[in-house]
Length: 96
Image 1 (cartoon, rainbow, N blue to C red):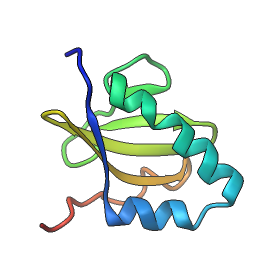
Image 2: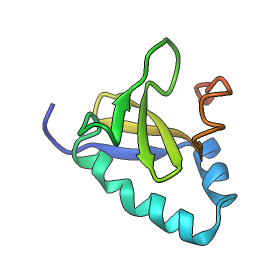
Image 3: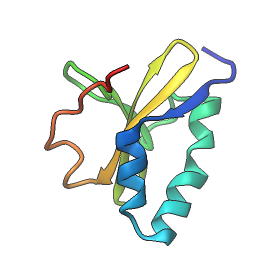
Image 4: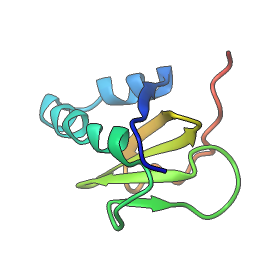
């Protein structure tokens, strides 16, 4: 599964990141290139989540979590939230 992946942001991800403080936004945006290189590891920062549905992977960045899926060569980012909030809601696939 080597290769280069394209990171794509959903509107819900963009909305979530705009709500964060500038310092946290920068920290999260600096961590995203890791997903373009290898969205499947290394643990514990990157982990596959149990269960069904959307956002089957998570990237840990301090107290924030990014939920995403890998679809072919695309890494689709769905949400970024505090660790206490990210797993509470059902993440839905955006309409096309």
